[in-house]
Length: 313
Ligand SMILES: C[S@@+](CC[C@H](N)C(=O)[O-])C[C@H]1O[C@@H](n2cnc3c(N)ncnc32)[C@H](O)[C@@H]1O
Image 1 (tube, rainbow, N blue to C red):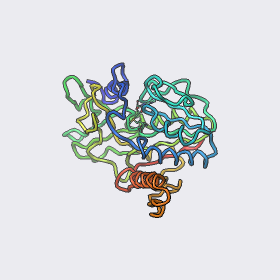
Image 2: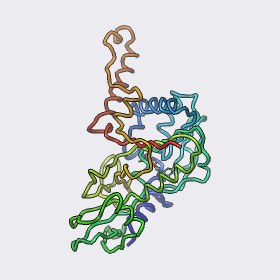
Image 3: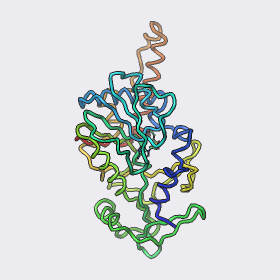
Image 4: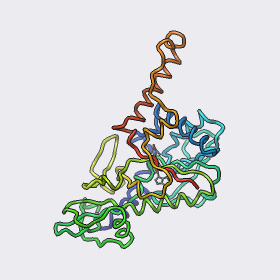
């Protein structure tokens, strides 16, 4: 039996970890970086780079480079770098640099001294393993231990002092009912600070699903994904393991929803004028696809509710 944070790390980033599989994350779930949504998101991130006056985009936890493909196509003037746990994927545009990372909370040494950079971490922090605490039947919070082989959890772990201090500040453990689960954000805060420390001048953007202190999820959010379906979280390397991010505890200068952030970057779901269908049918169809991608990305009940956390250096 080991704490969830350890079992989770091994399950995703160990030698036979889930994220080392050839099919990559896109083989199991869809994100905003894929397909037509990815093209609209990449264009908006290009405008964010312009707004911040930077010329290099580093995508940390970039999967197989989906967002970078869109950026390379639409913004050949930007320098691009992808970072993930696998070797450089075949078919990545030549102009894109690639760094291989250890995974989870750890980053490659070569990712350092970044200047004039926009660092994007799109759905990275939710897969940085964290401690899971559960309140036992007697009302005492315990670190949850897990045994992948036996498919069992045990509430016998003491709470690490660092995790306890984080909880006291961001997710108090007093008076929680038995069964309440707390996903401790300390490891995500530290991983994010580690990434901030790699930048000399620039801006970092974390995009993720998460929660703030006014609405922490009492039942926990840890879940697995495999082949497009949510599955019970089992730390055996057969599925993704993800938990929502306590976005308000991350070191930050600005935080907003994806909906507001994209609107401020000029993404609108306005449909193209019908006249265009007569004068330029292909252009009309392209504009229509962009407008429905923009609608999906800014849907307040869907992707638009994702958090955008910005930190400038
Ligand atoms: C949920 S997927 C998101 C992929 C992509 N950003 C997207 O939104 O489609 C998380 C990705 O982060 C990668 N990852 C996790 N920890 C990492 C680290 N420390 N350095 C680089 N990549 C990491 C995983 O291998 C995986 O490809």
